[in-house]
Amino acid sequence: MDKSNYAELRQRIFEAVNEKSDRAAVITVACWIDHLLERKLHETGSRRGPRARRLDERIEAVHRDGWIDAELRDDLHRIRRIRNTLAHSVDVGSLSDADLQATLAALRVPARQFHD
Image (tube, rainbow, N blue to C red):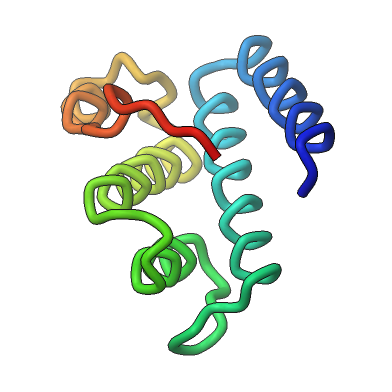
């Protein structure tokens, strides 16, 4: 993905996240993560294991191939679990939920800065 396409995609995602509920924002972010991991695996080809079809498999594949470290892998799984909770629960619809707050507090990578 060239930088102009990436910048456009990033802008569209940020606009969507800012306009939506917590539920929609988390699902949108998880979709973005899934899309980027899928593209990375497709463009470079995973060196080991079967083709990753689900987000959890894609996270493990990029970690296994050395593209992300264990800390980022764990954070991506936390985001995936938050997405699953919000997508499949009628009782939880906000990031203000105590269980989700604990998961958000466990995120480690936001303090780090990445450059691609």
